[in-house]
Length: 84
Figure (cartoon, rainbow, N blue to C red):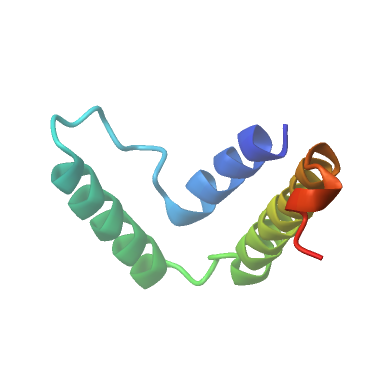
């Protein structure tokens, strides 16, 4: 749910909503970079704090999931295979 709503928000802030379907990844990257640069050049309404907060939240949730999954994986190992 965070990814769906957040990706729409970031796409809107970066001005990437207008990207059409392109045939190859390099074309998509070039078009996206051009869109971001033009959006930043034409207006000062780019919400840096909002985009930063979204990515901070996203990375925080990913790190939390990684730690939880590692802890769960350790419970499945036998005591002999845990290292100490």
